[in-house]
Length: 166
Image 1 (cartoon, one colour):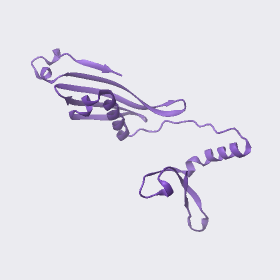
Image 2 (image 1 turned 90 degrees about the vertical axis):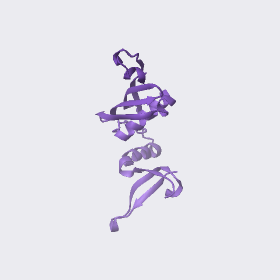
Image 3 (image 1 turned 180 degrees about the vertical axis):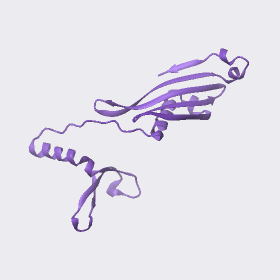
Image 4 (image 1 turned 30 degrees about the vertical axis):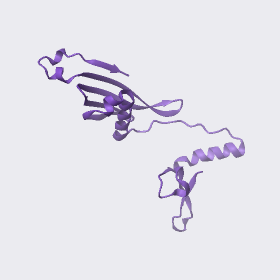
């Protein structure tokens, strides 16, 4: 059930400011609520009213790519590495790295970490895409690992390096 937030700017009457699209009952302050600005959906809501009440065609939505924040990119990359590598990433230590923006909805992150006797170097590109008129996220990655002892030895250029792509 959606809840409506109504504001009254003095004697100018009342206006709908937002709709609770998800959250606790009765706009609880104890639980998180997700609000949608009414001005952003009013035309779309009007088209649905016309479709339902007057038999007009239902509105067509055109999805648009949202901007990706650096924080979102980091969360997506960490989730990907946890899912693909399990304890090889989740149990790692000495993790370092950075992400840089490649576009409005795209980041490239470079990471370095150690798990056991292996050193890992990874490059992950996280981005939003449109699929069937819906926003989804996708990624590409290149991960390399080599033995720490070998890399610290006399001939680090001769160390065997394992590579994983996705």
